[in-house]
Length: 146
Image 1 (cartoon, one colour):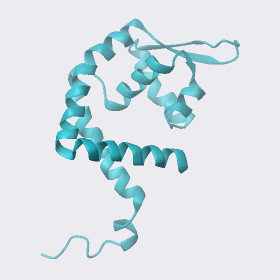
Image 2: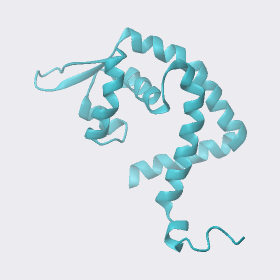
Image 3: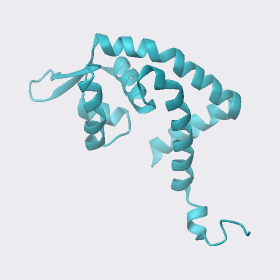
């Protein structure tokens, strides 16, 4: 049996986007397993924590802060709103809508945070704390420059 990449086009093997997406999927699955007892996925936990830090905030402003497009943000917010973890209310000028973290959202963050810490420590123990810090810096640079 030969190398499985022999028939793979070189551009797929060397594709930066593919490598980042594969890594992101693996890390996301790792964190999702840890956050599952709190009933949250990693993306949901990140949005709740981001909203706790930034909110109340417009949907467009939050999408920009989370490096998401507006349509994806809208779809991602629906289950959090449905579950009462955030509310969408009129914004300060009356024409926009603003996201507000609810008390249930605050409680869910408090429930999930210890699970997230275990995932964070587990990732750092496997990948290396310094390497993880370097990775975060490199990916932040990708977000700023691409």
